[in-house]
Amino acid sequence: GAVVSQHPSRVICKSGTSVKIECRSLDFQATTMFWYRQFPKQSLMLMATSNEGSKATYEQGVEKDKFLINHASLTLSTLTVTSAHPEDSSFYICSARGWMVETQYFGPGTRLLVL
Amino acid sequence: GENVEQHPSTLSVQEGDSAVIKCTYSDSASNYFPWYKQELGKRPQLIIDIRSNVGEKKDQRIAVTLNKTAKHFSLHITETQPEDSAVYFCAALSGYSTLTFGKGTMLLVSP
Image (tube, rainbow over all chains, first blue to last red; front, side, top):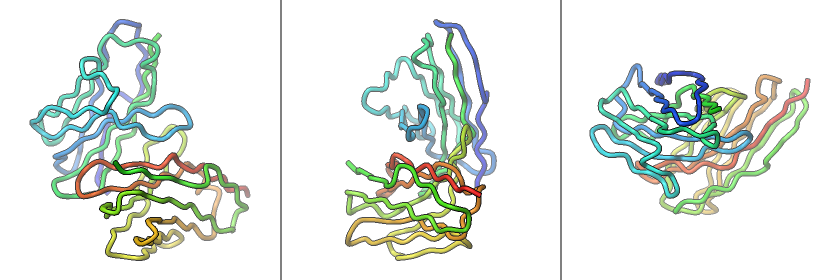
């Protein structure tokens, strides 16, 4: 299957700081990327969908000014958690999909801990 | 929108037994149904998928069946092994929109 990388794998930051997470498709062009948040023992919660070169579409209840998403190229999308607070601590996972393809491939996830 | 129900939430089997996980979906327009396996702290990995023009698909010990009329699909794992222990998610997709995931099934295979 296709390969998606994500960095960093884990990050610890102080409350009030911003954290940027990168998601890269390594061997295919990802026209669409997705950002999920996952709480322990729960399913994947879609935060937003981004298409290359367009503004992201956020799910209801997700603050777009807090979770900034950029999908500037066909291989890279970034999620920036601005002014992070302890309640933002979670496992963030990206996934990517090619043009006119249904299959989504997931990155390894980023564990964020905000102190 | 689409709603995917997944059962059971936990499943314990003995090594060598079969395991079956069932999902139902609500949107009759859904036409793609992947299954993901997620080990603790790891990424969800696609293990098998099926499209609506097919009723069954097999890959070694794993099979998926789809009943479009009843709007349900199932994952079958035969000859289970301890390394099959993980959380399994079903999902449904209509066109090229967003995947809707089930809540997951924690499968525990005891030696």
